[in-house]
Length: 345
Image (tube, rainbow, N blue to C red; front, side, top):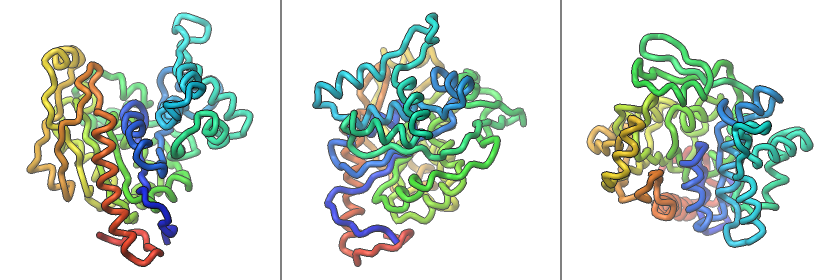
């Protein structure tokens, strides 16, 4: 059974990692304190990859970004700490491009015998709203099977391959990993679970590969919300429309459809289009009719910050998500206070 709902603010879980999830969290923390960020743990590039390969630490970069997104923006001391944690040493130095925040997290992980202890230590220093939790506490590498049957191993190789063909057929983990029980409990107790925005095959779907996550998403009484990306990405989603993105998510939901897909319909300025065209990226086509095969409802909106870099507008996106979550929360509050997980609207 879910816990008794005693607060007026909805419980929202954001599943992902990287800049997309951080944008969403920055907006949501002003609207509800009941936030949980469930973060992918399969990154193998950059500073996180070096710490993982050389010292056996779990990937820390996405955790760092989400911690900073939930930090108090109004406190001067916290602001200084956030700036320091985001500082990155030169890649040509002996510190090899490491983020200071990743190094601090690595040290605290050793001191506290695990990344969860490191997060617990940092939360009060950052005066965080909500919490951050890894999707799994076990180790695995992300792999991709391409349309020709060939296999790409490691998240960074998938992320940086930079060619559309052969297309990605599926991504998978090289070993089974159990989902973090804290993450499962958060999904089951949520009013809304938000997937995205973020790189489809390296930030969002990997979370759905941990054993227990698809089942929890199928059972939860929460509204499942997918935030579609603004732009395609060469090497991952080069010719995808919104329905293609949603389809890739739904195939991992253990038979459940999405409740809502949030799709941007705002035009992208020509100067931004030209910049992204050099990277082989283009705006995602909303494709409304076929999208309804994978979601019960579609929410359109003008949701960009206009870039570059092009990002969702944090406030606009958070208001839509919080509104959907609050409506569900109020609906559930009218029922008996002991709410069974998986109850339908």
